Image: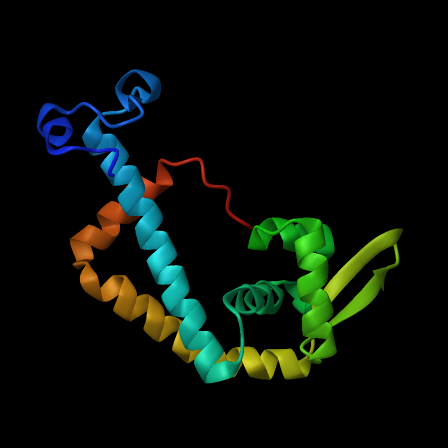
Length: 170
């Protein structure tokens, strides 16, 4: 059973079997917009993941790591910094880097200034794999998102998202 009933959409109140009206402080429209945003993100992410896996055997998280390293000075980042950029926990990133290292796409280097610190470094093989996968990734973004919006709408989405507390990597 949906938490939003037709009368909730008409009146702007959330209603449902759990009595969300008094608990959320959200209107039906606000809750619907939030859910649409979540579903859009999940849909686009799943599409990109599937396309990258089929065409290149590369999960989306791996593609993201390779991209971050490719854009970094000397194609290397401290593991802590990389974890923040790809929105993974340190342990999740460690497991992912282990797999990428096994595949020869990334190497680890010790940090000269901090004996406990490690760098993840993009290898030439990793750069080549990224170069192969990037057209697939960009086509997915275009077909699942950008082509569905007009130029004015893209600017509007950018302006709206700029208002949100999104931390971006340097």
